[in-house]
Image (tube, rainbow, N blue to C red; front, top):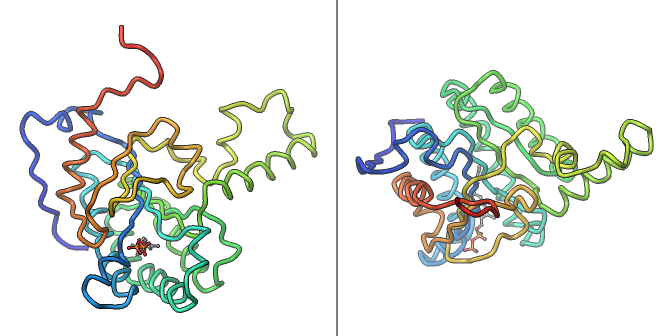
Length: 252
Ligand code: FPP
């Protein structure tokens, strides 16, 4: 990891007030393929360029008051891509983890992975475990990487575990409510996202954090992920801080 990213906030920005900005930002990193194609390069070239942006965005978080950052790296649907692209992405994730492990640990970043690890190769899972363990005492930015993650899959896996607890007498069906169910989700230790950003001009959520984003604010922006900067993240956080969140209530 390198120098602090260049983010200049206006003095009037509500982000500069305590609790004004999004404490948890979740990002759907989209547009790597189009970015590469526009340069006449293979899609994997775009994914590599995309991986480089992750560092800058992670480093920008403390300065913006973003304590939790969750990034969608690979969905349960992404297996439908060509074998070359899937294998290339898996190799990229292994490389990213090995390369960034030390820097993330010393930069006080706590890393977690969400998603179903069952389908991932053993070597990658071992690296994921190692990164989680080596950063578990950190209390700076909480970086969560969604890998082989799908919101519906997560809810189905959570329901299975919940049903087992009911069947084995550990949970009373009467006690299942909006507080209980999220304890079974992969994200059980994380707060809900305040702001969900999707790059590349697509306005859909593609099975990302379905339960958790019920009251999130959304930003669908045109920038392709490999062009996304810390500065743009700063502007989006600033815009978020100016929004009026009511959570279904009416302002009195
Ligand atoms: C979507 O773009 C992007 C992905 C499926 C992969 C995201 C992965 C990275 C940014 C790299 C590594 C990240 C980490 C956290 C190590 P797309 O391929 O769907 O783009 P397109 O819509 O233009 O085809």
